[in-house]
Image 1 (cartoon, rainbow, N blue to C red):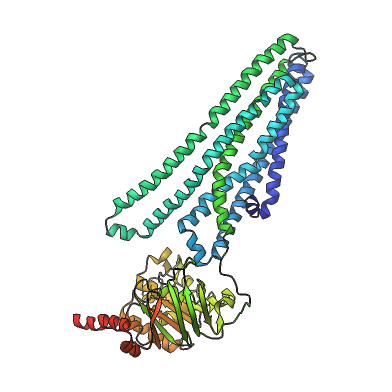
Image 2: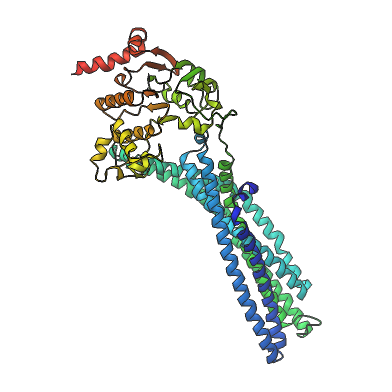
Length: 582
């Protein structure tokens, strides 16, 4: 895990090295200061020697200033290293997520990915800053202070070592009990973010159904769960401070008792016992060691918390797309022909197929309607064409080649897809349209918008094509959003165009005008039209009727009316039923 995370340090490696180097310099200077203080007391103040007082005082000031400088530089490099590490870590995670197939994304919820990219990275960033600075400072300070204490008096310094096993046992208890709780905390954070995101996304539905109280209750329950988990963790963590204080006060009492005996016995003679200055130094070294032991315990707790976050981050970094470029790396799609050869598909790769034994041949340039009840796997069928998923069994051929043999970018550039859930991004209409072609001219933008019947409403907007679209397209209607998404897809000039129920929010007249524009302007493009309305597909060259993930019928409108009971029933319920209502 550490090796994987360390790959994100990269250009901040120098800062990560300089920070602990300056920390060590700061520690050495801080350890020298008590020694100088002892000399000042014993050979300056006690002997009333002003020359010694002046010389030692200058050395003390210089040591303090240099220590301050080293500390400031260590802090600066540590901050730079940790912030840069977090930046690279987010970049690496986001870059990897962009390569995910739909099946990879299905393993993580949106809220979980957001938590990992924000909260979890922040936890790891804080831990990294502590590691490159405090994690070097505390052990170094403890070691150097202990060495200096042993130089003064070995017998008394042995008491310091007695604190180590006590604190080690306390740390082990805290780690083994707190870490599993923090793992649960971050998983619960995912649920919290999911509830908040779902509520904000569907706030209009919540208000229209007056379900605010229900949503409040959901939020309160999950928030309370996080509260309970943190309380459980804190009950374990609070042992850290009392144990530290017990050790500190015990060491101070023992030092005071035995040091006093040494001073009395020696008569303040450094050759046979302990001097007042040396006792002062021992107190300083004791406090330095114990304070840094306390700091070490805080670092330890930070690592306990961040370990759960680091594991979650590594899960995203380790996830590899199950869709990769084909071995043949074909970089040209010859035409828009599509063939399904005995295709079966399961989302989880198991034996329960949502598509079974699909065997269909479609010629380039044909208009193919796809119709069927809810859950008949209409969307699943067309998502196999641009390899958003791979067929579990059988083959899907585009342009006469297995889709798994293409370079992914080549295949998807030739297949434009307007998904069932239309998505617009924050930015102007022009910026949204140019997702289809970044180099499109304004004339091309207007042309595709006219084909998609979007130009009329765009021209009525205050800033026309420069009108700003809010995130998710919340400031345009459902029908307007659909037409903009169709225009965006047309800018790709694809060999295959898939409309996944993407005209459901427009009226029948506009739907007919869009289909007419397709027939006149892009006759060589193979068009798949998934629809609930028979009127949207009755003019298609062929219509696929799906039921329960199987092809129940395949033919023209007239043929299916004669031979397919499901299609005939749908047609009569919509067309004849509509006339009866009139």
